Amino acid sequence: MNCYDRRDLGLLLLRLGTGGVLAAHGAQKLLGWFGGGGLESTGQAMEAMGYAPGRASATAAGLAEAGGGTLLALGLATPAAGAAAAGAMAGAAAVHAPNGFFAQAGGYEYAASLGLTAAGLAVSGPGRLSLDHALGHAVNRNWMVPAAFAVAGAATAVTVGARNKRLRKTAEGEQEPLFD
Image (cartoon, rainbow, N blue to C red):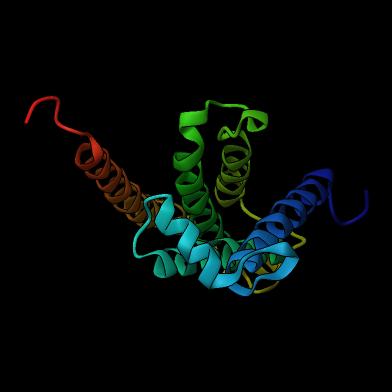
């Protein structure tokens, strides 16, 4: 190949595919595009899944998916974009985990695949066919990878942990006492 090698083209394809899918999912949540519910409906669904407040959770998930996906596709701020998208997908995987692994049974397979691909892109970098490369990697420095994952990981742990605590309290509160 001429000035770009197979790695650069492969990273471009991964970024465009994964970033495009994530951006579309985020647009469903934020704007109601592509058959999505928009913030109001998605907020209600998030509340039902244990993420509260629902509208704020829908906004955060939508921004992480749409923003992270768009930035991944462009190859801009790749560490932050990949970490944000991976965090959002970890939150989605937490919802689907009780259904097992495979997506056909409602499992977390799809969310895990998107999240791991986004994380892999954050770690590997965007390649030369990217805005990060064109801008001299101003927002794609080596130190940004662990920093982005630390922030996204902490935010995800707090969010999913609060959801799990909320679900446990709800389950305990709904149980009828055996004896009065």
